[in-house]
Image (cartoon, rainbow, N blue to C red; front, side, top):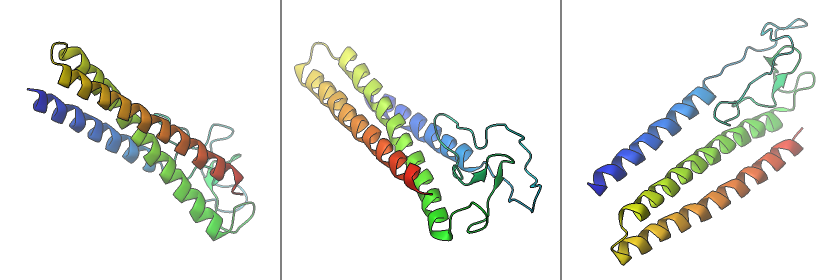
Amino acid sequence: MMQLAKRLLVSVFVVLALAGTVVALNQSPTYAAGAGGGGGGGGSSCGGRFLTFPAWYSGLVDPSTCDLLQPGKGSAPAIQGYIMRIVLNVIEILLQVVAYVTAGYIIYGGFKYLTSPSDSNKVAAARKTIQNALIGLIISFLSIAIVTLIAGNIK
């Protein structure tokens, strides 16, 4: 019974993580096509977030038109900075997926803790699961902060 619950929980989190990543990466802006652009957001937020995931092109759009800037042209960074920004955005997405999975393991450890009050070995294993998940969550949050700091310094 416990194996089935564990498999179900892991399956749900994998599906949600993949769905969130697909939605975040599937937002495709248009390239700027001259003076007027063509994406037309007119002041709306360009590349909003989904479940805290940034768009893969975050930081690479013209805020006035929401058009994706071409590398090395106008105010866009050179190709190296452009690629680095995309890589950092994808890393941030993956680290946030790790944070969501870690939160799921905390819930799973709490479930194990609540359902095994009479067996001291199971209680210890549940506490260890929660402890490891909290350590992973802290590492994930620190990693997200570091990636955000680095991404903020790339121009």
